[in-house]
Amino acid sequence: MVHSTAEFGNLQRFRGRLNRAMSTLKALLFDVDGTLADTERDGHRIAFNRAFAEVGLDWEWSEELYGKLLAVTGGKERIRYYLDNFNTAFARPEGLDGFIAGLHQAKTRHYVQMLAEGLIPLRHGVKRLIGEAREAGMRLAVATTTTPENVSALLENAMDPDAVSWFEVIAAGDVVPAKKPAPDIYTYAMEKLGLSPAECIAFEDSHNGIRASLGADLKTIVAVNGYTREDDFTGAAIVLDSWGEPDAPFRVLSGDAGDATCLDLALVKRLHGG
Ligand code: XBP
Ligand code: MG
Image (cartoon, rainbow, N blue to C red):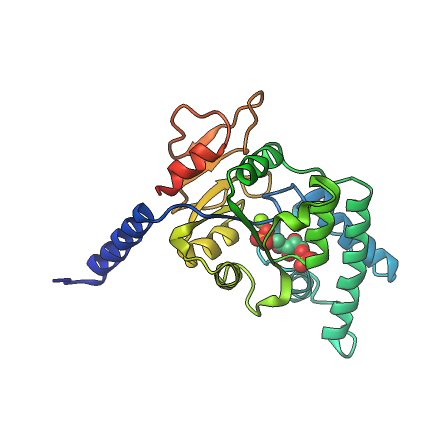
């Protein structure tokens, strides 16, 4: 008999653990920005600034300001957040939605161009882990807030010309109306895969990201980056400072990696528990 909300919560968590213990891991679900690559400070931020300059705006998003703007996911949503909170004096044009959408299109063009020039590499360990997962027949998907073109451009340029085809589902951008921290993009990706949360695991780098993945009932492995080091990752299966490579071990910030020194499939499976 369940007596209180706390006990009900405990029971739900116990059920989740039991489901996972009975479910084999079938798919890895990857966030993109900050997770597959360190895209924000020297990628998206620069592309936004180039777009602003292109249309004659004197806006300049510094590294520090951009850290604050990352509170909101999604480029269009971030521009609006900037205007509402950091540039309230800006004389807004009529049809603000269209103005923001146009600006964001220009930003996407600049960002994709930067990827094509090979300016944004993958994080250490990503290629190795994905290669290992593919060899083991693990299914792969992306669940991200960013624009679909950005994902294909990153995968093609930084991972492999064929890498887009390695991912069964690329859930990205406006395909769901509520972006992270809402769980919708993860739920959407799992629906497309035809899998339950207990059969999947998520990879994230930020507080908003893990709120989305945990909200979708997914076990989540975190590797922080410069902007997210101080984020709250309560509920993560493990928090690492990087994915690690055999010759460049990760540091465990919280959780238990056993003897592992880089994130390999064996550790992913152990953290999943199935
Ligand atoms: C990623 C984001 C994205 C990018 C910009 O969040 O916040 O908005 O900064 O991408 P997450 P777009 O890693 O949690 O998915 O400009 O294409 O929206
Ligand atoms: Mg991210």
